[in-house]
Length: 401
Image (cartoon, rainbow, N blue to C red; front, side):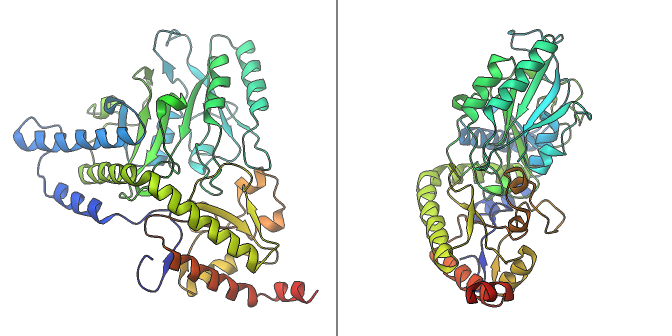
């Protein structure tokens, strides 16, 4: 339990910083050198960054030289999701085959749906089914048409590894296989998956994936682009200047944040297998008790592969905004979906894409567990939700019926 009187069940929004991470960041704050300086202090700072680069790379099976640090997952996605991105591996001429079309799933995070740099008309969405899984046939068909119409251009497919609201895992290797048949590049937003499931960028086959430190027990304000190879090029990089981060992201690096990111990645990697089993058991217990409490509760994406820590659900008659307030007053913190909506409770575009009834989606809540979660947190949540149900007049009418 996080704290003594509250239960924090919103780890997909942000995970509390691990104590060992905070300690490492404090040491980094006391390092005086600029990582680009050649003197001893500068070399020490550079060494700390390169160690963190190795730690982050290890979390997803990548080479350290293929990790580029950014200010977070949003910047990482906006950087890589850019027109003109080219693959200079030799398989294609990187000058003649720039990326001119972005295809993403209808359930992507807002920073992919709205945060890319493609102009209107060059970004399209591929539907998802009722389980939240991308329509592979639709993706294949669209890429086939594009390749036939524009043989000298290239598409970029961006599909998250795990959905932030439902936890549903996408079939990335199948997506990559389809994309390769049509010469497309593939990016995956792995922000929610990192530290919760094993990730191997080479096994997935994606050209790049993106990460965020504060989802794995690191600090806010640090993220990364991880490349499978060093072949991708982008002429119009968003931040140009001193040439830091292989020229992908200019500016003096956030040394304490990057160090914290590295330690968090290492800690998450070491605990991965045990934590996945522990959180799966807690999530399954939570959902079973929810159904016992209110048998008409719907668990979204329950038929699909999911993250071990995430449960999105709705109970008829319950409004998310009211429930969140009541739960908060009872000492339980959770979410109605993405935390990137300026603190507003809105109908989920993810559930809309899945075809969920609008009335049900208005009551959607999300619990997301993490390294601080224990069984007492589940107990407190169930007690608080039971109280919210009992106080709801719509539920009383249903019970009477």
